[in-house]
Length: 420
Ligand SMILES: Nc1ncnc2c1ncn2[C@@H]1O[C@H](COP(=O)(O)OP(=O)(O)OP(=O)(O)O)[C@@H](O)[C@H]1O
Ligand SMILES: [Mg+2]
Image (cartoon, rainbow, N blue to C red):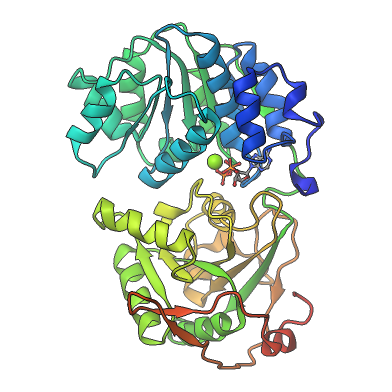
């Protein structure tokens, strides 16, 4: 793996982990721990509480999952782990990541408790006495209050995307859940961004925590090429089409509203782009279909609200487009963090209108440069338009599909020579 992932420990085999876990890590090509994993895993194995942060896409999931699984394998009693995350899609993803490293340990059952899914399916999983429970705050407290989830044997608690959960108002539910957990337990909290106020708030739930902070000169990955497109509301869609025609690979386009996501995906579909929208108003099975289709590369574009901005790991995402401005620098960091993961390269594009500049003065400085402390030079793009419709293919389901893996277009190199 590339240097972004290389930590001080040169192999997972140098860490004192159960053999079965080491075999599972090998099987999935996890050989060298990332810096956050190098620092967190040994501390977590000692039972320490941890408040951890590191850039997006640098392996925070395994940083908590590896010691958690190691602990459960070493403690063949009834103790269990509870992992709370802000969104259903992230809960599913974390579940899959943990399944990978559980490998052949069929005795360690997992339960996934998320909203929008039939409760009976979850009751089935809970009856099997899962040792790992992963879910979103609302559904977890729901099960605890129904007494279908017994929280008294939770020995490890993980809060992923901690700042977001508190920002979204899940603090109340998290506080409620905490009441049912044993006082003596290990608590691990993670996010790429942990502002001071959240750290203070979160520390209430931690016991003499170790603050593990993988420092980087910049908050966003230097592997992300960030660009700005200055535009107006009326020209925005045309400029988006220009940009799309230059780009190969999977693209996430972030918009502000659920309705905006549906409308943009529809418009793009009419223009022969294979775009699907994802947002919180969709039924759960539809949300899953959209994510899975995007993961498999069946549709090139996913138009998303912030529901997809945190934690999602879709390795082939080459571009993130902020079609509507994010509300804050933190939002921006997480949105663009959907690309350039695990040391890969990616591109982030930011559409800014005069209204955005007025509405969000903190976004840009007087010269119009982004005011974020990313330390990355933003480049203004020329206004030269090259309209080139991408070739459309029919899938077996009759949907149009873009050939995402064609070579880079010449037009692109002409317009953006210094960026690509
Ligand atoms: N040690 C490793 N070796 C190789 N790949 C790894 C390693 N650890 C994690 N990865 C891969 O890196 C990718 C990003 O990991 P992960 O989703 O845990 O990042 P993250 O730090 O949680 O990001 P975010 O802040 O966006 O949530 C995943 O595809 C994961 O499988
Ligand atoms: Mg994560």
